[in-house]
Length: 185
Image 1 (tube, helix red, strand yellow):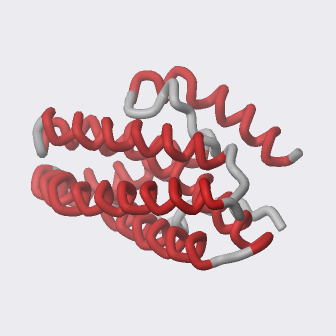
Image 2 (cartoon, rainbow, N blue to C red):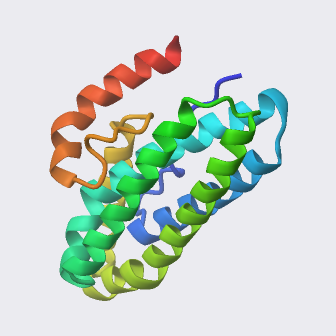
């Protein structure tokens, strides 16, 4: 059974930080589910995690990161982009492995630690700074833009665009179209 990643329920006034925190919770749950599952369920959970992470990171790079550069500083934003690129590279490798194999288990455990650390950094360094810089209406507008960006994002990791807002804008729509066909097949 193939599941599609549904963006967070469309709230008429979605606060970008609230949306991202909800997605972080779902990512954390999926990481646990993948690690604990066996057989076909493990592949299903991993596919859902892969899709969610791909669209989540694309949305962050397109909407959150330009604001967090101003709010938290370029060094913080660049560090998060670098972590996302590393996670994207790891996810791309994991996607090619048999989810029931030892190599997947070892690499997934490393990946899980990195993703959790990345989420902690965002929640501690980026999110409070963005919330302090932006008004509630600005955060809501960013939330709407984030959900829109996610709806157009690729559902598989792209090592060539990870960590780059500009590359996401240029290549994202084409990659998303290719991924939607790939996922349907």
